[in-house]
Length: 339
Ligand code: SF4
Ligand code: MG
Image (cartoon, rainbow, N blue to C red; front, side):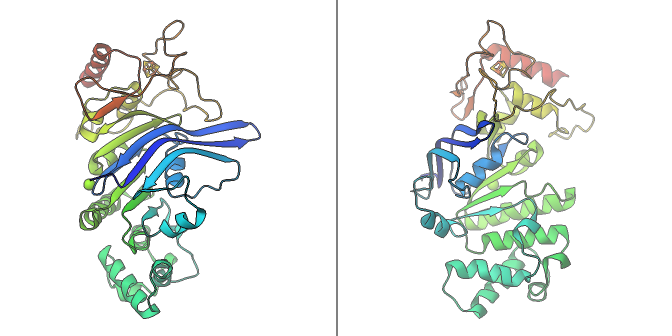
């Protein structure tokens, strides 16, 4: 089966008064139906720009997009605005971090879901309303026929997130992009929403991209993971490979900076020193070299040569972009596990 989403050498560059912002700089990945890809990185890594570009939400003004983004075989980059508009909501859909940016305060929840449905289905309002109620029920909202008549402010944060998921999924999209969908929610509700997404994925066999800064969320629900830094991919593979056998010092740094994924609550947190680079001025060589404690600078390759994204020795499902040798990477991993 072909991947439903295939992104190849995607570049998204914005011209600004200060220069060119290379928000995404040569990204390649694919997602099959039924698979969840986690895209991880700090803010400013290019992960959200990637998702907006896949959905065709960037205005072409002062934005230079190259490469290709095939969604169900149609290339979003070269397709007409009209084609992309017709696909959005139906073939691919977005779940935002903050439902209030997606939900209109003055219309009832039901009406908003009805409108999303009627954009793509020539049905009566009555049929669309029944569909909206069905979706609210499906995402676990109690008394959905009553709740459909209420307004966003009458919903709790978790219920609003469920309502937005109902709206995003009302047309059964094959590709769902969820951008930090649970960041604003408390841990219990967060777990419920992630479970809900998994259930819906099983039911509809959709491809999901989950954008997050949280490796805990990734380990919980993703199948594959792509780690972004400075607009590029630094490590990519199955969750098992990337999180258990991390190759890139940046990935290891992220793992060290989150509460442990394996139930050891006593583990010390070590935030990565320094800040992510400005996308206006990504460091040459390896973009991570100013922050990397293993960097080989001043004559080594790290501050001059950009490391290529290459298959990790011995694994068919793992890529990394780092100049370190296999031996050195293993030593770093072992030192981390022992700490
Ligand atoms: Fe660190 Fe060099 Fe590897 Fe970049 S290429 S992550 S600077 S060791
Ligand atoms: Mg899954």
